[in-house]
Image 1 (cartoon, rainbow, N blue to C red):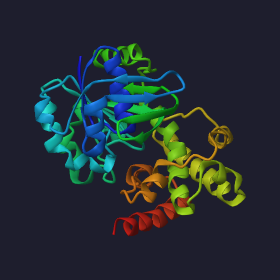
Image 2 (cartoon, rainbow, N blue to C red):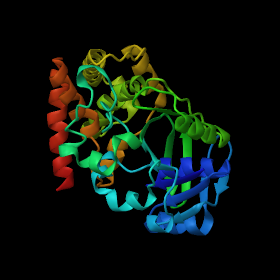
Image 3 (tube, rainbow, N blue to C red):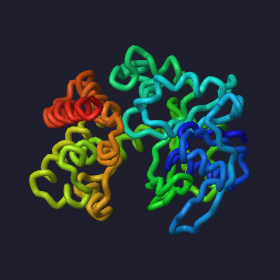
Length: 323
C-alpha cells in the first residue's frame, strides 16, 4: 500500500508514522523546520501507549512521490480548494482521498440519497471549487477521535485517543475502506469502517460547533466553558439546535447533551484547535463548522437562532484576525 500524507502536521504525521510502522510505503508532504526535522530524524511519536520513531520518506514535492493508492489529507478544510497543484501528482485513476477534517465535508450529499442527493453545500464547496480539485468519487470520509499536537518540529505528542472512523459516502463497506482500516489497525490505531459515517460526523460536530467558536471568542479552555453558567447554557442551546438539523437530515447521534458536556469537562484545561489557531495568527476553520450547519438549517427549515448569532460574531472575529 502506497500512501501520501498531504499536510503532515500533528495528526497527519501521527497517522503516517503508524502506517509506516505497519509496513506501508508512506510519504510525508510538509515544509519548513518540521520537514527538515522529519528528514533528519524521522517522525518521533511521544505517546502514553509507547514512544516510537518512524523514518518515512518526507518531502515538499509531491511530484517526487508520484501516484499513490491513498492520499491522507491533513490540511485544514479552508485549504482544500487551493491544493490542486499539490495533490494532482499523487493521483491515479483509483486513488482514494481520505480527508481528516472536522465539520461538514464537501462530499456530504454525494450519493446521499433522498431529496438532497447531490446538493452542494456552498459554505464548504463555494461554486464547486473544492469538488473540482477533490472529486467526491475519490472521497473516503474520516472522523478523527485522536488528540495530538506538534510539540516541536518532527516531534508529535499523542495526548489521547486512537480512533479514526472511516466510511464511504454511499454507505457501502468497500474494499478500499477495509484495506485502509487493516493497515491502520496493524499500525496500532483503531479504524472502524462505519456503514454511515454521517452519524459520526454529527457526533463530533456537536462539540466542535459549540466549543470551538466560543473558546475563540472567550479565550477559554474546555473546562472553563463548561463551568461558566452562562456559557454552558449557550453551548447547550447550540447543541440542541445542531441535533435538530442532524435529525432533519436523518441522522441519529445517540448521545445526550449532558453526557457530551460531561465528557468535555473531563478534558480539563484543553484549548480547542480554533483557539490555538487564533493565538498563532492562523485562519479560523469555522465555515465547515458553523456556516455549513446554518446553511443546512436553511434547506431543512430548522430554526437555529443561537447558531446564527454565534456564527455572525465569530465570522467577524475570523475576518479581523485574518486582516
